[in-house]
Image 1 (cartoon, rainbow, N blue to C red):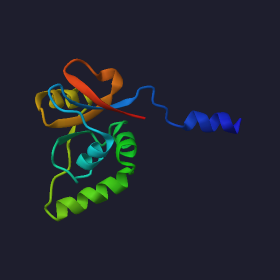
Image 2 (cartoon, rainbow, N blue to C red; image 1 turned 90 degrees about the horizontal axis):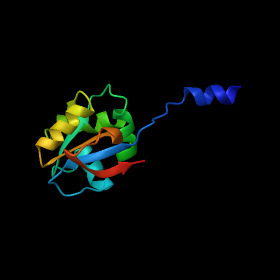
Image 3 (cartoon, rainbow, N blue to C red; image 1 turned 90 degrees about the vertical axis):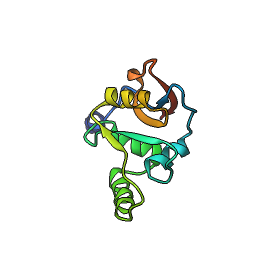
Length: 126
């Protein structure tokens, strides 16, 4: 009975997360994505989901290996020292996809089921 309850509480995602890039852009690997979203590289323009999005924390854990508190601490330091600004947050996957499709230097993440011909999947996060 306790096992069933514990399994019922765990969040389950039915859809995979994918990192997307503009159709004309070169591919990216997991290390590059981590570097961009943690402010260690400015070669691409990172587009974030809203912090309240259900996939926001999941993305950072899978792509960077860090939880949200760690990510916020990293960005606080970057902002305080004047070395950069955090990724622009979009309302949902549709807005992220639209921003990435409009900018050849942009990278974002969405649910795999939201992918269409306007963007290219560069990486699947498991």
